[in-house]
Image (cartoon, rainbow, N blue to C red; front, side, top):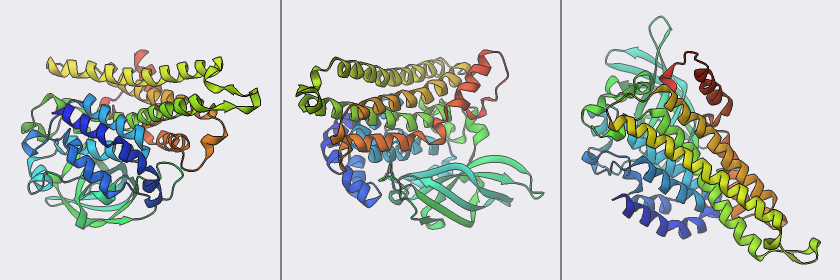
Length: 388
């Protein structure tokens, strides 16, 4: 089943590439692109089978994301973050899953996980208020997953939860005017004193332990992997895809380029250009290979019924943030060596450069924090596994 999705996505790549300019002009992924990706089954890849999902291997999901991002960074980014949300919804209570997919299994969700909202405990649930930024693809979605701190009656923080909120209960504020990932429509979401039943919430402490009430119905190993391993990968993989697209574009440009300043020398005959290609290709391949290898290691523990060691989880984050950096380094090297024509508005290479750097500033790509925690664990210091 996954292969059919991958084949369908690859058939769409020329069209997505042609629409990249349109996405930037609209500041949102074109509706036609979302519809066509949905028709391939892409958005169902990590969705439970009992709701017409595929329960696919996350590596297959990441492969599709990287392909999409190689054609259009904004479309790849939105596809990744919207496409991973069914995985988390599968961890919610069955009541919440039925509310999302019971009448329409094609329902999509956006998110903003920073705990910028405030939730107050009331009978049966919570009153949620706040403003959340950077909800990529929200215009295409009917629900939102929002992070919030839970306060008790004394004003003390007692939990950090994800709140599942339907479209009629929040407002989208159009604020997305950016130089990179310009087509992602990552607008603000505003909620004003909305009641969220307890069943429509999920504690981050629980997901940090690879648990969730939805595991009672969704028993596949897919839903026993760490939240932060799966979700941070969805931030790095599009950037790897953008780097692959930049690599292909650079090769095509350089194969035709004649360098007037060097007496008409063909750029492809420049030995230094060949070295740059080799280094960039290795950085891109290493980013992908380590991401896949670490995920396979985690999957192995789950398949054997064993707890995933904290070191493995920290290694996932170590190589995820370094994978982003490797992809960025590759894009930078290729862009710098492409000549002035690469600067022209509308060229794929400059767009990939802008999009990759925009993705780099996501909180999941903060390298020092992830690297420090891995190093501290190697030295034997105690690390809280909840967020990794």
